[in-house]
Image 1 (cartoon, one colour):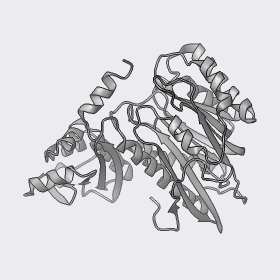
Image 2 (spheres, helix red, strand yellow):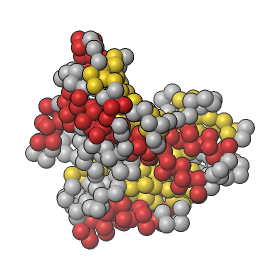
Image 3 (cartoon, rainbow, N blue to C red):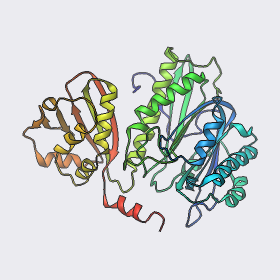
Image 4 (cartoon, rainbow, N blue to C red):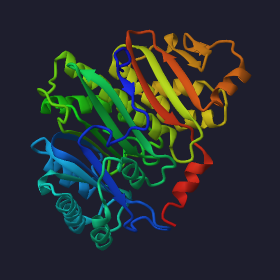
Length: 406
């Protein structure tokens, strides 16, 4: 994670903070209940170097098929998104609807159809109400300050809007990376999160766009979980319009390394917001694993601990039942020495050499009652390290999902 150079978070920043991007939203009546924003467009002023990573589920929503097809050349200029309906498991008609939705949005904002991506989130198995989308799209008016509306329009069960932007200097020029995300339930990404859009005014080589986005996803969105359920619609898209003029930033250069680190920082911030806003959640759980043989092993173990329903329930109840953490460590499929494991919760060490140590149970319980709960696992096998994020498991999660369509 980048933290040693002059990168700074942009106060109030989001997906339209980078130069040359606009966004807007409207209410199409896709979401049930009182009129709420549920249709959004993010568009660049010029064609962009672009890349996206998608769900690894074998059941894939129609918008992903269209966006994959349109990204074949590594170029795009915008994305249209809706909430309230996933357009997943909708057959050939769903595919036609996704294509029409993208084409209509492209015509509306004046870009080439092939350069408009599409993303949807919401209920699976319900036809997309294209009549409502056709009616509402003309009311989407992208502007420089429309990013906040777009970020609200993609929410489903989310309680908070998730936006962020960072600024840094590369090759003597100030560039900005901005983004928005949504996600609260069905969060166990194997690429990204339900929906996320990242923009930058830097000029990027296509190879760097692909490599940096995948690496950032692996260390951020791929390291969060709410409920172990991977969505049919997961999409993380990156657009780089080169509004800050200069030679494209390339891989294996100091400039490329700086950009990749900043992109990772942005994605981690958005991913933490998603984990903290898990359905019914009251606390964010951060799991740090150190001393693994490889960084990959450390990330794998950290994610397994953050995913464990027993660990999540333990945190919700402020129950210092630390053995559940080592149970999850053992289930990760990475090489560990059970007799070398160490565990700390907050500032309290609860295990060493794979066994209990004397600790203050009331102090550990208090640490688990904090808004952010820190769990640290030491493997004592190498220098690999990794971090994952999750949330506690509450009755609220069951209630939200038991009543999702009723």
